[in-house]
Amino acid sequence: MPGIKTIAVVGGGITGLSAAFYIRKTARERGLPVDLQLFEASGRLGGNIDTVRENGFVIERGPDSFLKRKPEALDLVRDLGLQDQLVENRTGQSYILKDGRLHLIPGGSVMGIPGELKPFLASDLLSLDGKARVLEELFTGRPDSFDDMSVGAFFERRFGREMVDSIIAPLLSGVYGGDLYRLSLASTLPQFKKIAEHSDSLLKAIHHRAPKKKTSQFATLKTGLSGLVDKLAEKLEGTYRLNAGVKAVRRNQDGSYRLFFQKGEAVSVDAVIFTVPLETVKSFFPEVEGWNRDNAAPDTSMATVAMAFDKSAVDMDQDGTGFVVSANEPISITAATWTHLKWPHTVPEGKALLRTFVGKPGHDELLDENDRTLVDLSLRDLNAIKGLTILHDPEFSIVTRLKKSMPQYEVGHRSWLNRLYEQMRRLHPFVRLAGMPYDGVGLPDCIRQGRQAAGEIIRACCGEN
Image 1 (spheres, one colour):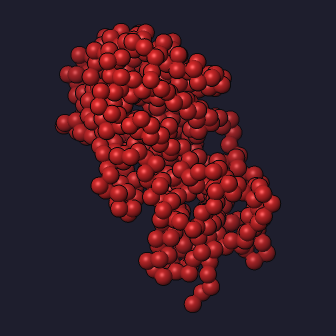
Image 2 (spheres, rainbow, N blue to C red):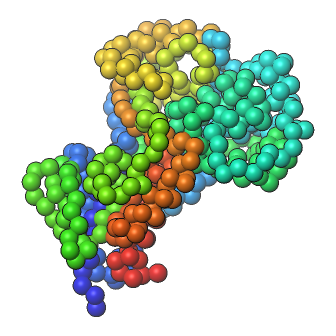
Image 3 (cartoon, one colour):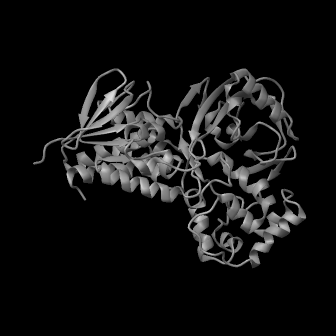
């Protein structure tokens, strides 16, 4: 029987927790001699997932849910036995804020691309010329094949600049928060690249793919997403350490690794999965040339402002789940969620919960303002919207700053990632990288990467298929 293999996971966000959970699960199911250790630099697990439960409210400081169409998060929920805690979002109207007014996102659209022409033509989001430009796409024909291009250039070529600025950019801003004319289509929206390669018209293709009736797209847990972290921590009890930041890594002559911590101690391990920020891992392996990317865009930042009210203090004409903001709108918030309508379970009876997103690429200085300023700014922007009035200050508010939290997948990201992975596997076959900087920013993507890294490292260490 082979000797015990020590596997370390560095980073206790959802990617690292998922990696550790699936390492332990696989080792136990197959009887593998694995000693698992997870190291987290901060004093808590979960990374950006952070649920506040206060006065009967359930408030998310980071992501509030996960996409159901990507199966990895639902798989993890089932593997943890939390199926009875699942809650789906209330379906309802969503809006785009343009020219100070909330405009309905046309029904049947997918990421802003109309799947039905009638609601699109009835919408006032685009001018007549803008609509005509979109309809030209029906007759444009299949584009030349391409390896990658920017999201902005792709959609502008198909539908025109007005469509990009007024509909597509705001819908994507909440996911990636960057410049659409730098973001990689192949890495952020590969489904549209695939459709373009196999269809003469995106409009026709979306029409056939669009759901015929509105259904819930997102899910969370009744007690908030921290319930997922809490259950993972329970399953991993005894294998993780908090306040254990790795400051350096050295490869030993026998191929194992020595991890050095901020407090001076060190441990030797046979294999490592790193789920920490890219710049941190880069400092551990300076000999790897694949880190370098020409003219890479900096990670973007944002703040979230959650505000709790008595329902009588929020007067609005619209019944929906929230809105995103057009690219040219001269305000600071980029989106808002009417949380009490989208997730009714998160508020006590008779209460309202609004959550705004503040900050645009290149304007990180706004996040340095104090909490009161960000709350006032959110209230000012909300009250400027026709049909929406906040009658007084919130009963309480929670401001969260997520600085440099959103990696930017620029054009060529996939090629860069493949080169980096190839070099790391060649130079460090018992090291894996996973998390938001690499192959997806949503919770299902991070869980997938953690689980995939766990499987690869088990095979590398234990020879398991």
